[in-house]
Amino acid sequence: MAAEIVDRLPEGDEWIYEVKFDGYRAEVIKNGDTLQLRSRNDKDLTATYPGVRDAGLRLRARSAVVDGEVVAIDANGHPSFQALQHRGAHPGHTVVFFAFDLLHLDGEDLVGRPLKDRRALLDRVVGASGILLSEPLRGSAQHVIDAVRSLGLEGVIAKKWSSRYVAGQRSSAWVKLKLDKQQEFVVGGYRPGPNGVDALLAGYYEGRELRFAGKVRAGFTPHVRRDVAAALRPLETERCPFVDLPSSKTSHWGGGVTAEQMQEMRWVKPTLVAQIRFVEWTADGHLRHAAFLGLRTDKAARGVRRET
Image 1 (tube, rainbow, N blue to C red):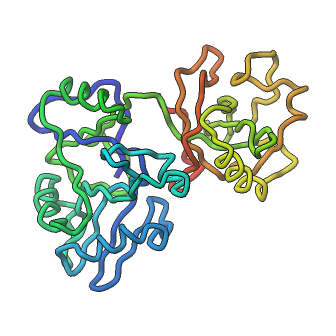
Image 2: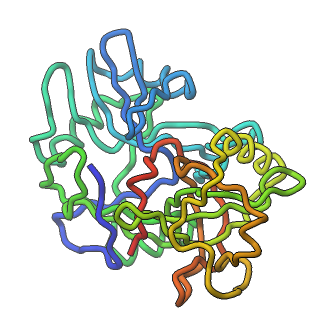
């Protein structure tokens, strides 16, 4: 179940507020002495995050399906998507699982029950397992926004206590407010540099067409540039996947790509998804001051749209 994007949080006693974590959405699936961690596009993450696996085995249930987010946190509990992507370069971070919903418990399907009931059961099931609870944020909508913004966190999720769990759908019973501008983009090409990737060419789907959003140069370390280049090289192709390139006019870096600049680029099959932070969309539909946060293995490229 996914949340709709809003520009204002709803208020009232029927809503619960939670932190919008910067990580990988996943489900912990326990069945007796076995446990799987599955991403939202059904990739098996169990071996990738052994600490989450071990904590999940300690859940107080014979069988359970717990919805939540895999997050890398520092010593102060602050999440970092880049640390989750490149754990070797961020030794001070720990990978944890924040649980926020319970879909199945000991043979009972819970998706038809209201969130308030599911959360009450979740608290008991998590116990001292090492799985962390996504705790409700107390106070008015504005108090919650101010607190989350002061901590430099990505945003706030609001959910109706009465909401049933509707898998695979984006529902107005769950909404999200982003406090900084970032979203997923499809990688359609790159400009090579001495350390691997000098810049990514990012876009989004409009129907079946991949449209160009901008060039992304910021946010890379030399190590990340090499890693991203290694992921892109097997996907290289002769054909530009963007329907609106080359651009008809010259613009600053981060804007369009001229016919002359096209010769500098390497094109890739549009299957990888990157998380990008940016300041704003320009009048001609490009990203301004975009920065790379990491590649996402939990999102399908065909589902990436321009968020509004």
